[in-house]
Image (cartoon, rainbow, N blue to C red; front, side, top):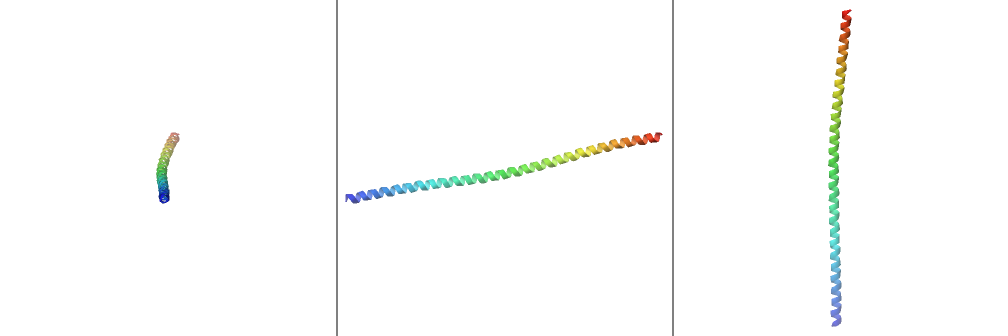
Length: 101
């Protein structure tokens, strides 16, 4: 009888220990899975943020380039108009001098 009780106690302790070990492993695997999901979500969010920032930067650069081109065109047009007006003044003065002779 003592042997049966002793064997039963040993088997019970082994089963209990193995269940506890499996429970620990299950918790550890669950924690690792959760961590992997969080890392994946963080990576996806970081990728979306980078894409958004890149698109915004590209739009800003495009706007800056358009504004710079318009400024250059305006400056060039003003310079050309100024040269034309100086040329007209010079031609008018030359014509007046020829008429005086």
